Length: 271
Image 1: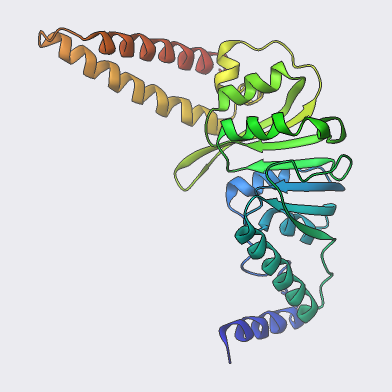
Image 2: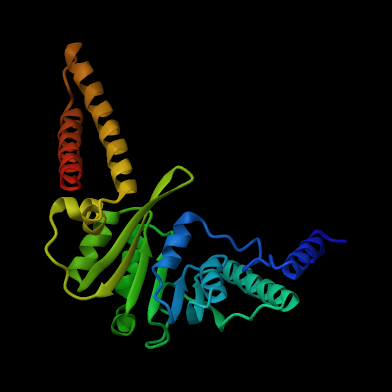
């Protein structure tokens, strides 16, 4: 018997014993993607931009949280993987007697270019660089008024993303930081509307998380404080040895001191 059939046989036996899993074992989201999924409003028609394996729309559909989904990607390979996972889930559901998924369509698209106005009221963009997410948003202006909720999880340039959102009529409704395999990730729930005034420290570290006194953000800030203090200590040690600082080193020290001030301001505000 193949491993796949053995797995299905075991699941069927568990189902007869009242222990049937709600989803196939391979459909497990990382903590980051679980937070992304949690920010998608119930009953949404969602579009997952850069869907890769298609796990987020499949997971949400399996939970009955969405009405329909578009799994979109710029590459044909990821879309083939997503389509295969949809077929695998449907086969698993049929064999275990669980409901089928809501409609999930795969579509080749460069960012939002393949999304028609009104097709989705929630859009997910996760796992991209911040500059890329900004470009995709900018090129997707025709659908802005039709999308009620944006779930963004850029892995870089968070401050740039927040500033772009604030200057283009978006506000961050909620925001969370989490740690996944030793790395820190931020997930934003964004809507259209006027953002309240932000200070520099809020753009850098996230006003909503600071207001909630997010424990993971606090952990991140303390880690960054330790890192910056280490850099400054190294620069001070050079000065004590009589080494004349170069212009680059002077600029680096000023930048680190400015960053340390922002970290301390954020920690103070979260007390």
